[in-house]
Image 1 (tube, helix red, strand yellow):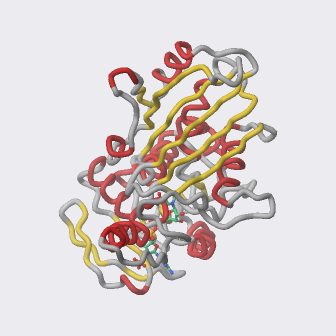
Image 2 (cartoon, rainbow, N blue to C red):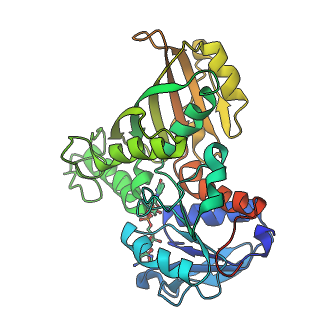
Length: 344
Ligand SMILES: NC(=O)c1ccc[n+]([C@@H]2O[C@H](COP(=O)([O-])OP(=O)(O)OC[C@H]3O[C@@H](n4cnc5c(N)ncnc54)[C@H](OP(=O)(O)O)[C@@H]3O)[C@@H](O)[C@H]2O)c1
């Protein structure tokens, strides 16, 4: 079976992740025109061109999935909750970008390079992780070959596109306004984002962590199959348009040298090392934007722990952090014969 021959429905085709999905379909499958573009009622009737064919966006309803083999959902969490089970019941395999099903024990949470084998037990719905969790597990996983992991501390610097198209518009408009002495008037973010850093992504929980931080903690454990692993995260929104950064501190059972880490990371598919700090070579959001890989640099011994490594990880949150990971799940499922919605 080939992805080329499957009918793909994209819920949220007009959003930033949906548009990135369409760009990747054009890049990877230039002949693929068996698509259905879906969004909210607001976008119904809008024309979008993919692979030289003009598609009309339709409102997503319970009847939208009768002829779809694979459904990518990149909309609001409540839309995933509503339409995910409907699409799966209609016979499609659903790949969901939201947090709706990620921690559901019956739903695999997958980064194909790390736990692609989990696709074998899906029941119609597969989730992709949060856009900062994906790069973190992409670097943590290969390093486990050197020694079992004991603890991860991850602090993020996340771009506004992680909060969708409205937050990108807000950064652009607010920067202009504040530069000219005007008021910030935040709407898409909880505080002023222009010329600022906000230590809050999503709402706070009773633990004192935000929901975004809890996602990183719980999702990393689930993907790495390490339910008891010690993980802590602080997630910060910064005035960058695209790409998320993670300052990651990994502690192992045995010492792992930076050289050993570089060797293991360079053998990991989807990871590129950019690590020559003396010459100004390290990953940065402006360089990672629009690219497929997870970039890692500043790899060094953690000065606070003999068994620890510190590193700096950057990835395009819309590409490997969202659309590419979803598309790779579909490709991986095809190659494993795991596209087994009711229809296929
Ligand atoms: N941005 C990231 O880096 C990232 C990474 C990983 C996961 N995700 C997840 O991906 C999802 C989409 O995020 P985004 O950043 O692309 O958001 P976005 O730019 O705000 O786009 C939201 C999309 O959802 C659609 N939508 C809204 N209400 C809907 C409804 N009732 N029925 C069907 N579609 C509806 C919108 O359609 P209209 O244009 O018609 O309003 C739009 O296409 C979210 O669940 C997010 O958590 C995002």
